[in-house]
Amino acid sequence: MKFTPKEITVCSDTGIHTASFGYYEGIRYIKEKGLKQSTKFSDVRKGTHFIICCGDVMVKVQDTDYPDIERRII
Image (cartoon, rainbow, N blue to C red; front, side, top):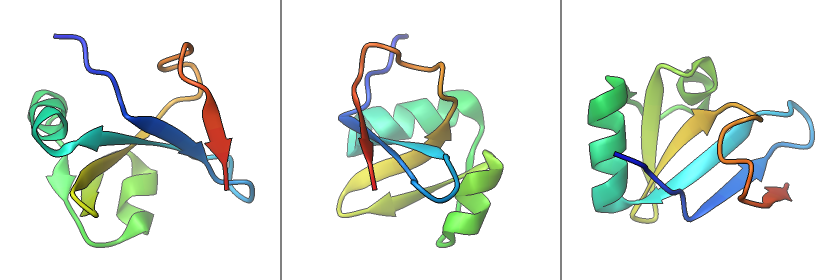
């Protein structure tokens, strides 16, 4: 299944790319990837966990993932 994030942000300090998926699509994504839930961004940066924030599922992605989606730098 092809997943499409709502947006991808890039941390200007670390260069880490974080994709935000709508809740239900995000749940399918994390199940397929075998990620675990956390409340810490430090776990998300490892690429093994996800967090839920404001109803979105947020996960780390590579800079080469989803090249057609423009990144927002924060």
